[in-house]
Length: 209
Image 1: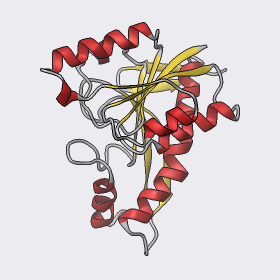
Image 2: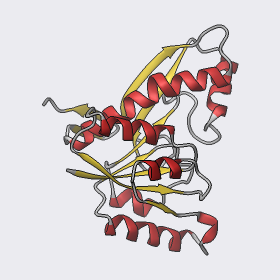
Image 3: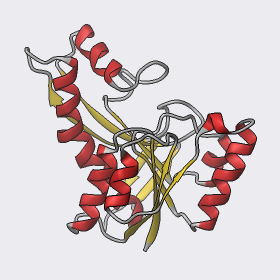
């Protein structure tokens, strides 16, 4: 059984997708031991409470600096004996020390088909505004492992959907979330829990069962 910590900053819809996947048996061999939030106002904290999952807030502005923040966060992860980390709408750049400590064990879900519409400034609704502005015909979501860059880690799963003529940033965001993000994040966590990911540089192969 792998201990999973889910990092959140906002509404927590991807957290809920993970919770639901565990509860209905689609995600096995994983127990969510903590929800870590960068905001005390995140609705994701209510989702955690409703599911009986302990939650902890690590708010950057409450610390004197990044070093103290990272020290406390690493301490909590060690205390909880965390094996895997899922970034589910986490808006804080992880310190390299955390990335190194959990190398190839941190997964992020990003609402675009990386390398399109990723990196600095591409977050939240802005991603979908940019996709529509560019006139792309397909979009989707990507799960990738975390490295020292922004949205640059090895890609695990991508799922695409067509962009409709009448899509708005809001409708596109909702469809990408429900049809792509909520599907591939639990799927990726299952692969990680089963130790099926083989990382070779920037490429990820999936080991047969």
